[in-house]
Image 1 (cartoon, one colour):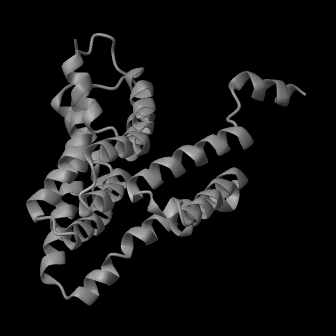
Image 2 (cartoon, rainbow, N blue to C red):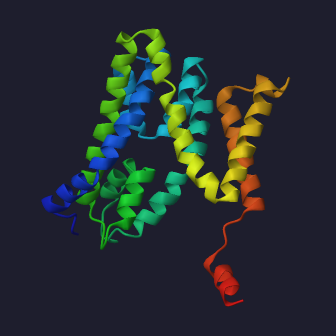
Length: 244
């Protein structure tokens, strides 16, 4: 079984530099938010090291802040990070069948949107050492940004911390706005999620549901609605439309 060479590791590390820099900016915001709810720098860093998921970690902060249950936290992470299971399945197709389970588990640790994109676009077979280089540099940036944000959250003035905390909202807006301009289905999903979030926040009975379970319910509802009104067409259907 070929796991790759040091050259493959260096190639993966080099490809991860842009991801590393981007992760530092986002995780800096996470570090600040973690500091605001009373987490220590070590706790914040370990959260980033063991999770490596922006949406999952940010959504977990409110549950942690109000001492929510482990069940709520676990279900929340399962729903939000469910896409990584699909990514891992697709990524496994690029691995040699002889790659051991240990290496597959090592690679699965670092399956994120950005790492997945770089991995699937790599020409030829995917060797574990390439993935390890890609993952190690990317995760380093994610954890370093978290530490910097957590430290900043402890020493900077509260007013400045509040301003920096808005960075995460700016990041999510920057992610969704370009796609909503070109894809009506995505625009509909975003608007539906906003409407449901507002309803769950203000409705007399629904507002009693904890924040974690609100996210879970809204995520499932929006995904179901999107699947009904804008289903993804398979290759056969697209081929029939093109021939027509």
